[in-house]
Amino acid sequence: MNEPSRTLVIIMYSDLLLHGGGRESWLAAFLKSEKLRGSYSTIRVFHFTAGADGPTIDATVHFPTVSYHAVDLSRPERTARKLIKFFRFCMSRYGALVSGPADIVAVGSFYETIAAKLVDWRYPWREKTIVSWFRSIWDKQIAHFHTPREVRLISRIESFFLRRTDIRLANGPDTARYYREVKGIDSVNVPNGIDLTRFPQNSAVLAGDRVTVLFVGRLSIEKGLRSFLQAIRILNERGAADRFRFVIAGDGPLEEEVQELVRSGLIDHRGAIDNRSMPALYAEADVAVQLTYSKTIGGGGISHSLLEAMASGLLNVCWDSTIYRQVLDDGSGVFVEEAQDDQLARALLMIADDRTAARSRADKGRHVSTRYDFSVNVDTYLQTVIHQK
Image (cartoon, rainbow, N blue to C red):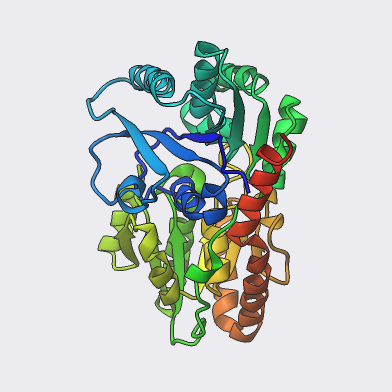
């Protein structure tokens, strides 16, 4: 058998904190794949450091053929200056470290894809394949902190660079559909996946006196956090909050709004959780809420936290949107009209009132999760990027 000769360069505009989110959890699992590492002679990850506290992927995931290369962006500067530094770093590191054939995978449709194409244009004579991997829908991610005019401009820039990549991968059918129908950009659907062995089923789901409801994610508007907080207030006003235990794991700009309910004794806020500790967190819970918006603001793709909660045997309460409908159905999850806080509160009460039906849905969700083993993610990537060459 011939030894692999290609280098994999992964570009990710991230500090690689293990509690960073779905992308970071995905990258840790991706690098741990023996099949992936056996397909490349070397894997190099280009990222940044910013002085944040907490364990990182580069400090905890080690293999002989994997190396990490970071630019220091800890100095307070405007985002544009940091991006320029990151782009220059990627070009210089690639020039110094990679001379043979390479696959350059941009883990993100905007910053990372721009960086990958700049590398391509800087070294046009070197053999390489530029891959853009959409982890979400960028237009919706940025809509809540940019004006519509700014979003349109950024969207055009994104499309300009995406059209100049060799291969495009999407993190779910909804993401692939959006880029095809709205932007006219085709991609290959590579569904998200998790290491199912890390998430044993919680056999005690919905067996306690109170229903433990878990929110995992960034404390931000697009993640639907405010709807969850309002549903908790509604339940409290109706004298039903004591039937539940509400746990939030994550950090972000809405921290103070969470702390308001913490001070009221309604929420247990755990802060940002290292991904290595997530199985233990899911083992405490009965229900997980999945509330990323899907319309003007929000995101897309197959949610990492959704898959983890499903695999752990939790019942998932989701917005009734393509983000979640592409994974679950009415028999394996509970769906609520998007942004309807009162409906969300009523759905939680329904679960507390009829635990037999809730357990049945949770069990079916656990069964659905077996379709999303991480090996499928790696196999589809290799089939698309390497085996078709």
